[in-house]
Amino acid sequence: MTARTLSPSELARDIRRQTLTTIHRAKASHVGSCLSMVDILAVLYARVLHFRPEQPDWPERDRVIVSKGHAAAALYATLALVGFFPESWLSTYCQDGSRLGGHVSYGVPGVEAATGALGHGLSIATGLSLALKRDNSHARSFVILSDGECDEGATWEAALFASHHRLDNLIAIVDYNKIQSFGRVEDVMALEPFADKWRAFGWHAQEVDGHDHASLLGVFEALAVGSQKPTVIIAHTIKGKGVPFMEDDNLWHYKPPNDEQLTLALRFLDHLEKPHA
Image 1: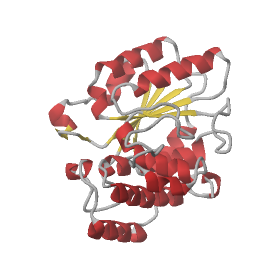
Image 2: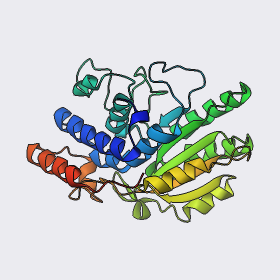
Image 3: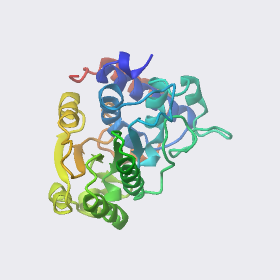
Image 4: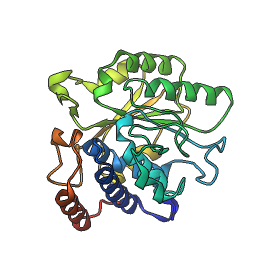
């Protein structure tokens, strides 16, 4: 089954289930960070991106960089569900010899670059966008950033570079869940007025509910083609979204669910009202 036969709501549900199960099995971490970006991934892979799972290196594919590489489990679940590799691979996540490392790993079908050292994803996506422009390609570069890595100077250097080179084929999505590894963003390094900062750097900036599929799709469909400006979508999200006892709690940045918690989390997902798609 591929994303073309799933609605964003169905894909988001399945990504959440696979992510929770994968992290539980591996006794890994970052489940909260994974769950906050699931709806962004679901809308992208179900309705927005141009790609061919059977041909991962198709030249005209849209490029996707998940800069918050610690959320690898959600990306891997997405790529498996849309057909880039068998879902059975997910059972090897974080195991010795697996292709699926705990941070986004190069060499996995559908992965453009290894990430995990935060602050580099926008630079990678910017380079890809510039190369696509010079090749006269219609493909686009998408990059999912964490809010925490927007503390880093390299992110803003790349933002300056992208606007200078008028990379209107570059779309950054900030998973703005308001929590980073050691606390709330506003306490660690306040970002507001966040959208205005991007605009001052020469970007189109839009804010959206990052869990509302219709709103996300509307923003993606309205991307300004030929605007000669890169676009940033600031997606307001909730860490741990979809599992009430995980939501907005930084504990789930670090610990996996135990058996009882996994059962309860999956039960919540079974009864979760489907978002509009």
